[in-house]
Image 1 (spheres, one colour):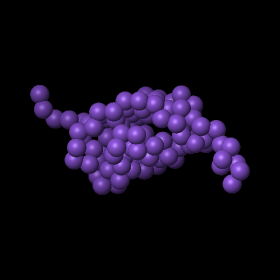
Image 2 (cartoon, helix red, strand yellow):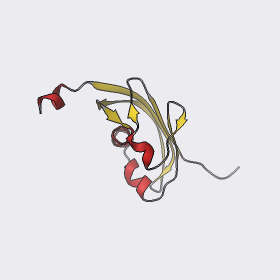
Image 3 (spheres, rainbow, N blue to C red):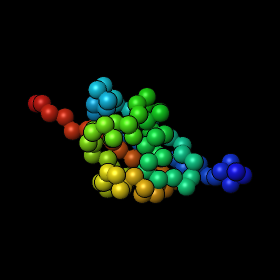
Length: 98
């Protein structure tokens, strides 16, 4: 219990851009996540900050380009990938049109 209270907080830069759960979301900012953290925990925190449930959107079939420090994250195996202090997490939904 004490270890959880004393766990370091990681600062992560994040971007969410595109239609998520049927609505357009444009969010860019910084979040703090209790460490040690993985992509799943960081996505949950980003979703709370952006006002959408990103994990629910993933399981509902949304297929974003999910990037951690510029590298593509595969779903679902990549959600366990560790996130480090200063990482950049991006959720980008492809859009059609012209």
